[in-house]
Image (cartoon, rainbow, N blue to C red):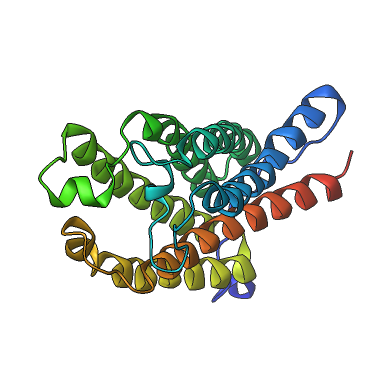
Length: 234
């Protein structure tokens, strides 16, 4: 009895059985998280190439697929693929959770992120000059709402992921959450300037740091779960 005093309780472990076709399918779903991040990065690289005068430093990602933006067709296509892969990854995390309740919450949060991602292109923002002239519509309101919902579920996934998978991943997840909060706040401070078509210096950088932090977190989570499954006894 005395030997257990002060010992941290054991967390339920993920279901990491990798035998047979189900194990292969699970690995594919987990690898989809890496693919999702890659497609998003490709969208961020190729999108600005379709829009002469766009500034990745000063303009937001949402403007790349705004109504009438020259980059919209390409970016929407790439982000659609990214969203489908993110949804698949969420199911992969759910499948891997087993009795690990924290990881199960992470999986459900990622599934919701994947679903909301699919709705995003249907509610694009308008170009900032249109918004400044009062041309904003219900689509702009929904775009802001979906962005807030995504941010909340990003944070939910990271919070429970931090609990689910050991000390090193916990520290990394907390650092990522702090990054999202800090740069998210810095980007949001220029929301009024965007709405009035005034300069928004460095807003694109703040937002891209935010997005990169989340995309990298998803890749790391995928790698951790893939390694756990690979190392499991068969």
